[in-house]
Image (cartoon, rainbow, N blue to C red; front, side, top):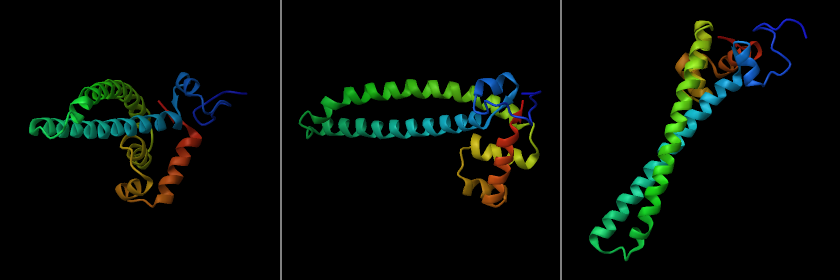
Length: 155
C-alpha cells in the first residue's frame, strides 16, 4: 500500500479508528460532532415539550378540571424527562471530547478552511448558513469541504 501520509488516505478511508491511530481526523469524525450536536438539540426540544406537558397537567390538577387525566400521566412524563436528561448528559460528555479532537484538527487547516469546517461541523450550520457566515458561496464552501474530505485533517 505504500507509506500513508495525511494526503494519502488509507484504503479504509471510513475507519475512524484507523484515522485516529494515524493522527488524522476524518470527515466521519466531524460528522459525528455535528450529529451529537443535533441530537442534543432534539433532546432539549423534547424535554421542553415534556416540561410544558407537566406544567399543563399541574394546572389542570390545581383547577380540579382534569378528572385525573393529567395526574395519571405526570409520573410517566417526569420519568421520561429524567431518561432524556441522562441521555443529554451522556451526549454532552461525548460532544465535549469530540469537539476537542475536532478543534485540534481544524486548527491545522488554513483560515478559510477553519471557518468553513467550524461553521458546518462544530456550529452545526446548514450550507446556506455556512456560506452566509463565511462570505463564500455555497459551492465554494462545498468545494473546500470536499478538499478537506479528500486530504483528511492532520492533528
